[in-house]
Length: 130
Image 1 (cartoon, rainbow, N blue to C red):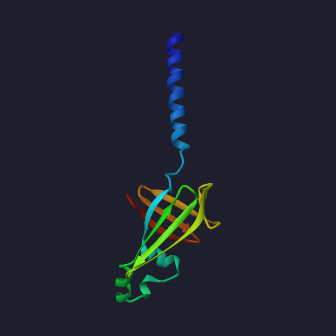
Image 2: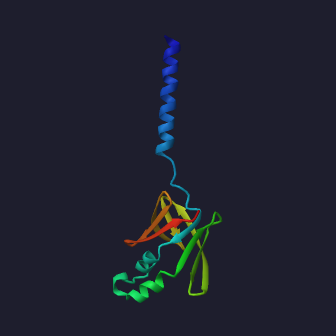
Image 3: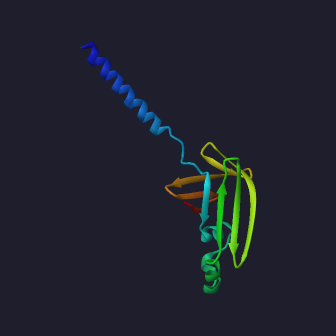
């Protein structure tokens, strides 16, 4: 009987440990390259997508932007469109379930291959580059 009781205790401890590990796991890594949704960039910039012409929308759709979060604490953003490319780098850190970009805190959430960064009610949405 004592042997069976010990086995039950060991199994119970394994189950509790596994549940704790799952419940306490960290968010998926933000490290990597992400394609920015150009319309969320516009919203973040304060531009109302509904107020621009169809021609302006078609020009916007030729633009692309990526953000690459590196494990050294830097992020590079690259904008491309109409034959030109620009880039800039800045520091970031992830701490206490927030991302700090150039010192400003924002909420972030990763769902599969989608990263949403929300600051002051505006969400910047991007998709992981594979």
